[in-house]
Length: 257
Length: 308
Image 1: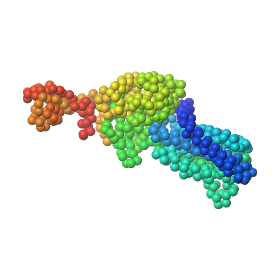
Image 2: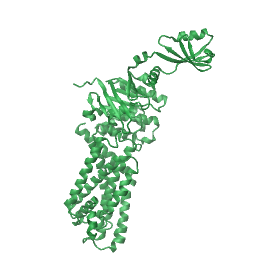
Image 3: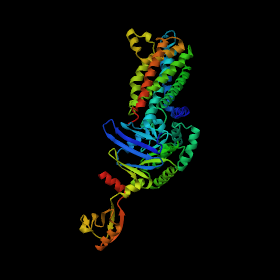
Image 4: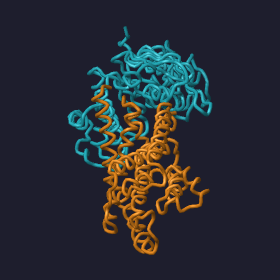
């Protein structure tokens, strides 16, 4: 298959993924927006008004980047894991398996689909935050780098999960028992500087901390961890999961007999 | 130089599944370009495994395969480009529209949407699905779903079409129209590899067949030659009264098996004739009311081989 053919195949996967999440927008776009809006109302307005500023930023403003990032993480992950496992469940993944489309094209298509949904949901949630707090941007480039890397990493994570999954339960275990705790403990609602030193060190083992912290830096110019250290952690995790996923697809794990 | 006269060349193909099942035990098979080839075998004989390896759905354990001269170990993607697969089970997204399923498949073969739509239209019309093109595939009947899979496999105009039990569960009228379409494709140069349980289908459609048993090809060749080599055929004879006193046995060289008081089965060897059999029965005062082969001839061969 020549380069143009690969581009056509890539566009086919992306188009299918985007059409899919728009077709079921009440399941894919609406729920995270409602959930995050409730966080804004309860934690930001009701409770947040009684909490002191964090690193010189009002609590309401402080949680906005974390909540946007939380929606990006869950949406990009769920998009790829749900769609890819759905294709495995209905066996329509065989459509590309019997075609000359290389694995990396399929992977790229699914991941771009996940990234697009993650970014779209993140953008909507960010838009909703305007009702509660005046937006501030310190470093737009960092905002873009962190949101893109995070959506990319969790789209890849969703794909890895779906490759191994053999039943629907398998694609809900990771979000419930791994992603949710990591996200809640990743500094969405607090600065790790407020934690005892031991828990600060434990928190540094959580990759979500680096995403939330770096993203927040883009808005307020404040960070608990060095921004470039956060970028390095994200790039490293992305590289490891990308390599693992490509290797598994090449071997046909979870796909071929 | 590659030998492109062969559509498929398989040599020493072995497949052992993770659970230890040895599905293929050194299969050698050659199918010439332009052939209409039938791969026959009982359930679990290894037909689908061979197709799975050729199409990229199954990893082989040992051996090699070439598709239109392209070694699948060297460039499987180039080989897949020449091939269309109609699998045994429905494997499309039930929420997608018919036209999307077909054009997306073209996309996976590098065909842009505008061209894919042009390719899809005559195929969907020929398969009587054009007026269903905007319907979700889950709303189609079983026969339509089967035809959708054929349309999807043809949208990139493959030189080799592989069909795994394509007429399973399809009604007689539709089956015959599908046969006509497959004959039309073959006449226009598409090599066809067909697996089927309907041996009548294989006898009518295929030029050459191979019979696979427990992961090995036990017989292969031209259908007419294979049928010509059958040393006996069983006939079901409806008679006016009990033959041989109602017991199984041999009369004048004919082996009779009594089914009921008006029906017997008779094995006729290559040197025995139906005329002589009727004459023999008439001499015994028995009228022959009906006489027909028990199964078609290929079925007879198939059963003979399976029984060993």
